[in-house]
Image (tube, rainbow, N blue to C red; front, side, top):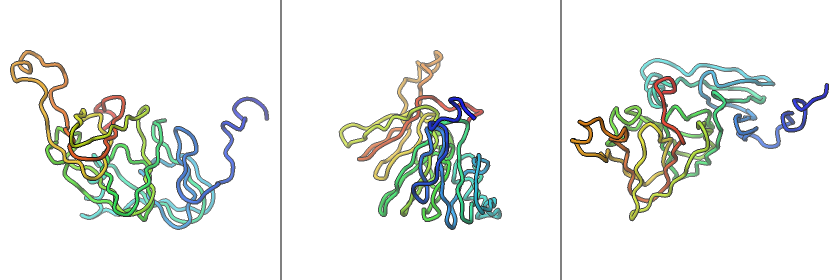
Length: 222
């Protein structure tokens, strides 16, 4: 068989490393030897002896689902083999979480992660329901976290001298050490006259980084 489709650009070769790697801009490959976790329905192909199991329900399971953002369900992948994950052809990125790190991320951007990572529910202080959801995911421990983003994200440094304001519908996540609060950038009079469309932002202060996607989320993408 010949043609550009069968060129080395698209041909999948053997795994070169265990665990999570970027296969291409839109796909993450995971060489599984034990267990990992992924967004439910994100698997697009696999080979080997793998089992896919929906994460448990009950009160604990429901809290875990709520934690990962807007009711995002998760699945456990167990066994030995390789699996490929993607979501709506969005761009894929890997975050290395090391001991002492903490990364807060919107659940809509979670694709997959190592089972060695711990995660918990956290209220986005100051954002409330206006912040794209009352809860975000906070990942700690040691391991890799696979994220998706519509377009190429911006990573903005935050310093004590220069806080950063982000649209609540565009924020992907931020590193430890940042404080959040709700900020209004227009007067009540301007809002009553129709406003600018940019009335409220999430303000981040401290020392760290915030990740922003180059578009605002729509109701269909939440």
